[in-house]
Image (cartoon, rainbow, N blue to C red; front, side, top):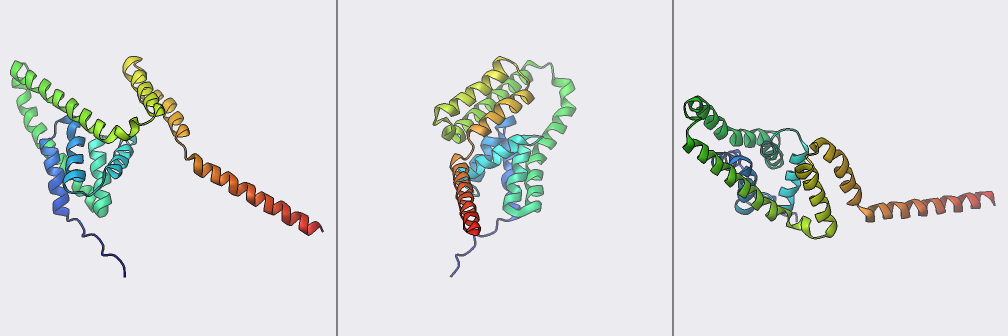
Length: 207
């Protein structure tokens, strides 16, 4: 007897969650809100699945938060879910930015507005730091993890190297280092076994 399939998540629920995340998040801190809603509250994904989606979104062009909404929405309800999630996430910001754009010319020299924006930026940094520690604690377990993290930080922040060159150098090194060695060893073992069998058959045919 097969296990019952989990209930399908409604389009309205997806739109509502991403709409709320887009409406109350601060800048890049939207990732922290998405994790809170998707992992902790709704339990649509676990931490590992969310981290996988985040890693994929980091490698794609465009905003990470929008990429995340497309990836998660597609996972939940296919192409329609991706469109719904992205629309819900973008809609609040689009309305706010269009409204503020009209008022910006009149208030851009207001020190209160400047202080408000600095506060928002600080909140965004705090949220990003929090979600980085929550999701990345598994990546701080070995010395090699810390080495790659520090090397990337130093190259971008201290040496001011182009992110493209950092990705083209440190990225391949990290991929090579974390390659699945067990699978590679198993493949070599299977190849050696097949070679031995082939040589054995050849020797048998000669006799």
